[in-house]
Length: 220
Image 1: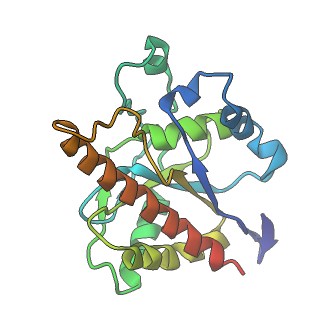
Image 2 (image 1 turned 90 degrees about the vertical axis):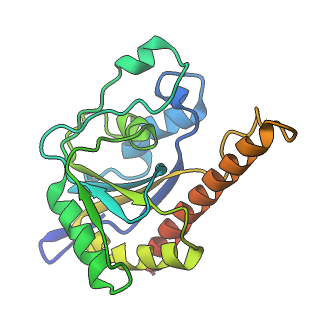
Image 3 (image 1 turned 180 degrees about the vertical axis):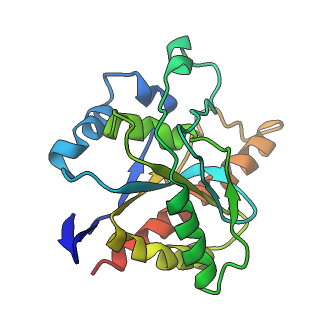
């Protein structure tokens, strides 16, 4: 991060894999220790706000959450240790950033509708890595959804439209993976439906990656 005209510029954007939800408690995972050391080893400057794009929030139209006050912690996972459901990440919402994201997307002329959700919290693809990176939960956070029914060009253009945020002190993070949990996928019988769902989720994660790729490209 550097200073420009009295304000901060975030030169880098980051795409991270948030792994399984157990990343929140499992000390044996190297990714956990990497994220905990993020401020010491990767980006020491504190961003003005954070825009996080999680592969777990899928909507038909681009949607941003614009929460006033502490953001709700969403436990969108099942069958994990009880202690994980007691974790909280009450980061303040970022309604101003949400409105700015909407302005940039609609202003591009490519996104006619951008919804604003004033209640939606942060799913585990957002709060788990942020809890490790910024445990104080004192940086305003806005989350943006992805559209799994749209193609790669659509999400490429989304990244292009959002690139100016880097000049406004906003840290942009993509959180997901190029693949998801396929270990229990059965290729026969009942597994067909699971396979289709896994493929849809896989495409959503890949398109999220494309958003971040263009933001990175636009920094050169």
